[in-house]
Image 1 (cartoon, rainbow, N blue to C red):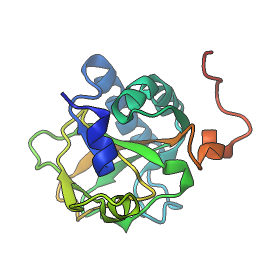
Image 2: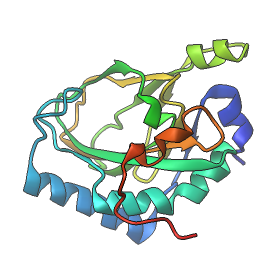
Image 3: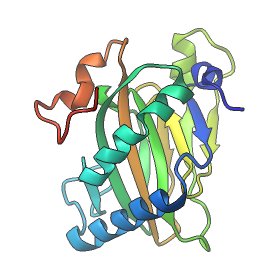
Image 4: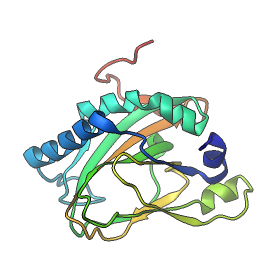
Length: 201
């Protein structure tokens, strides 16, 4: 059984089938359709000319829906910040990077992929995370995500990247959170004054 201890010791954890069933199918179809209708995002400097969307309304609902699971797997009280999803195309590359303050705790969730194509790995390096906490044995991990699988990670401390995509189409959503008791708590809702909806109390 996966526990928060693995996340706390390593700075990341892979959760198989974090999302499944009809909800996964619905969100995956939504991502493909939004990408088809709206087309590439020319302002995304990280992965140019690829459909990508900040705080899509459906993903914002998914953000809040998965909050209890995120808290369960990390052992932390979390505030949602923002969502971002991409529908990657052939030859896309995600360069090695770390994230901004709003992405302290994130999940990269595979929403939809062509099953006949090879899985596109995500690499994550936890050297900085471990050194700051005097933890031993840092390493680079390779996450192989099927549809519905999620990689939860500390994006500000753990560098992550993807090599060139050899497939044709893959929908991936990034749901970002901050530790409610940590130094980035002020980034709740990505410092937006008005969110689409307030969380139920």
